[in-house]
Figure (tube, rainbow, N blue to C red):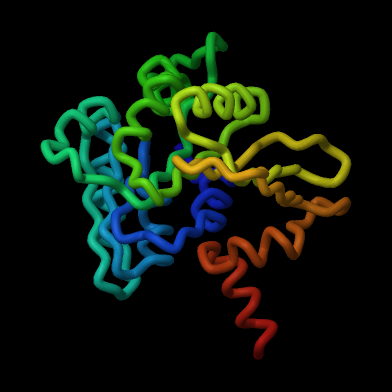
Length: 233
């Protein structure tokens, strides 16, 4: 699985004042865990995934990751359900939980098992995701997730029924002429009086990345960083 725009936006946009313990659910190659480590250099990050090959790849990437800091990163081959059960202390909570989860329900599946696992909800339903996040999210913690709009709206309703409230939504549009395709959502255990709404447009009418997207992700895109250095020269 290639690193997609969803992960880039999710990792770059997610911000929280409390960040000592971070969990990346469905870590894949580890990109979100590494983005969190680059942002929060003194945090402890755990990335979990049910695909063993993904965890092997994440650990290989860990050896190549050279951002300085006192962070620690652990990748574990385990399901979310079993991971939560393995936490023997009921006091073990996470300040940030981040996930770019599977989101296809009852749709066509490819003949590649790893693609099915990473893109379909068979192994991790939204109900299971919400219930387990609710157990291990700290009282002041942030749960950050990105989903297609129809699934996102259903997820917001399901989460609220379980006591997780959507307090912020980033609406992501491919360009000005196309409807919003993704919601990036912040959830917490505290319900605010309003939901903050923001909009991110990825490309302009010439199919060039917008300044808004570049400014958001330039710390993580080597291409944008090199462009900026050239402009400084």
